[in-house]
Image (tube, rainbow, N blue to C red; front, side, top):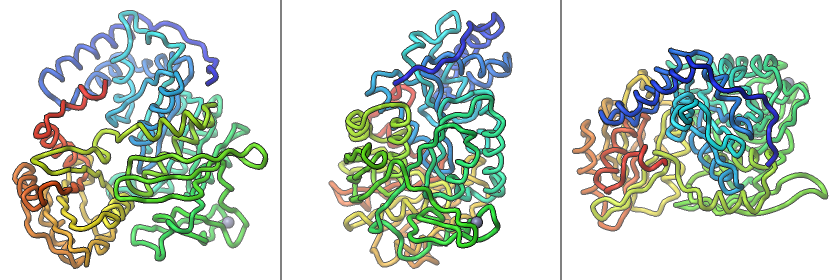
Length: 478
Ligand SMILES: [Zn+2]
């Protein structure tokens, strides 16, 4: 992998002090058992020295890669970091998904020495997931050499408003950033693929799926229509999820680019998939396959994105394939726990498109299906829970699934499941009691799938980790 050529200088005394105080606050936060202290050190350090992020972003010798999009940021960042590690580059990353400025500063402040410098910086690359709404602001400061754009779905209704304004912010940032980064774009999402028009001569590497066998036979509820720059509505040859598929504009001729990294065949299984990939074009084309230990088409997309980014950074297909097969799940994303003689799988679902993909994963599983579904309405979950009506919970009707509803809004979720034709067997807002009930409904040796919004996931994950005898995540991530 080639080294980025950027000038780096040591932090000023004020910046060093800010980093040290950030580290001290992290230690205190952890001692208090507060959420791993992933945000507090960054808040403290960033407030004391606002220039910190620019300074630190210049340090990794291999430069910075950003990963953004509505869904899949944490997993894609995790997989790209794993590939880089396999390729001999030490990634500096924000593994617990703290993806605003404070999270990035915290990732740095946790790895600098007393002089405020990242040790062995020449051998390192920054690999950061960045919140989709924060990217436009952070891009000129992080100055990434490579930027991955995954997808743009409607998130919880009260969060960002229109997807168009997010896409416009990205386009503006790409037009304004000093040195345009290499773009790694999802060819199948027209909102993402069109960013190539703002590459300003930088390299563009696209990834996508070319397998009709994984296409939907009907458009799902969450598919919000997308419109071309010319004003026409896109039409689709195949839809893989939401508005993501093989698209073209019937009016102006804008069309999905032929992906540089293409999944020619995806074999979806209960616990993972086999992905057959072609990279490059013509005589240069290479084909390979990898075994992904993560279920669902959405996971295959995340792996493709990581593969495309690694390919753009110059890593070889053997390293990419073996690293993807061995990477395992990211925090709270299809993590597995062994609890009370049952296998428990934790699935995060925080918006209609994401929930639909998780429901697709559940329907691939062999019966009997036992599901603990958890809905919270915290700030990070989206306080308006009506988004559950935009997801196709009807997919579980007729599967005989045993469903337990939990979370602050357990009653709303139970009503939604009932309307979908799959009423829950019990409704228990409290996490621990709901978990007990769901485990009791799961046959010994069988599997319980826990589907949860963000804060519910954090909550149930700590209960699962404790019962399974697994450490807290800040212990596991080192
Ligand atoms: Zn058009």
